[in-house]
Length: 351
Image (cartoon, rainbow, N blue to C red):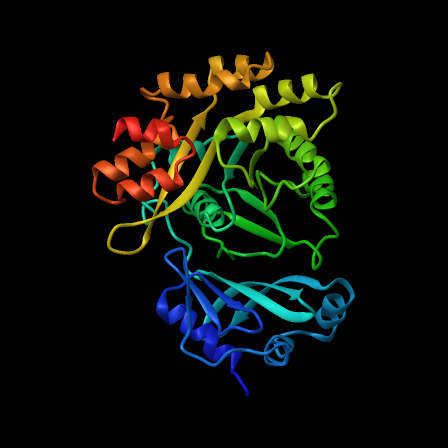
């Protein structure tokens, strides 16, 4: 049976879904408000999917996919939208996942983001990390932060991504978008040459290895404002994750670099909202003198208690506080609050 991939992707945008999944032996599935839902279409075969997926590729991309059995790329369909695509194989058949990338860049106000984010983007230098599992809205939050700079500051913003997702239209700032594979060989290579490109701000799409993390820390120490993402679920856990990438004898120096350059960590998770939609629960760590000392002295395990105490004007909050606030406002149920919490016992006591 012949399927029209463009019509399928149009339906994803029309439904307001975030993703489309094509896997053989099942009908097409969309992710709506975080939950997978089948589309009312026949079950797909591997040949159906291969025909649809290959119709979107250049010869070079087909060759890369057939060589590696994995392919990441961005896709723009006029009149429909922009997507991040991943092709892979399962049981020998081609499969695909498409993520919708909004063409209109949201503002921090559109996202109802905490006001402290506007303070972060005013910094001249340092490292700001937005973390969370896949599909937690990291890219959307970061694009909104960069958008805030774009409409308020005259800066040169260099982004390195695999692939390029949100494309910003230059307003007050100038963007140089670089895609790994198309515009540069790797994150690490792009960051090595970045300092010669006179950026004020550098956005690293994923701090996935030691070389990239080290380059990001160095850029933050040398007078640039650096934004990056990691797949971690808590703010203190993010710091440990960075340190653990390095060998034991290198860790004291890395702790010192983090202590001096880290501005903030936002650990984000999307929760299903009562009545439909989703809300972003955010754990926010803002570096101050006490936090810097704990990082330098290898006492990261004490940071969480500092986050509980050090609220006031800092804008810090734990994930527990964020989730409990949503529960008290009637935005999430008790069941959802406990299911998504990093510390369900703590949440249970507070609600």
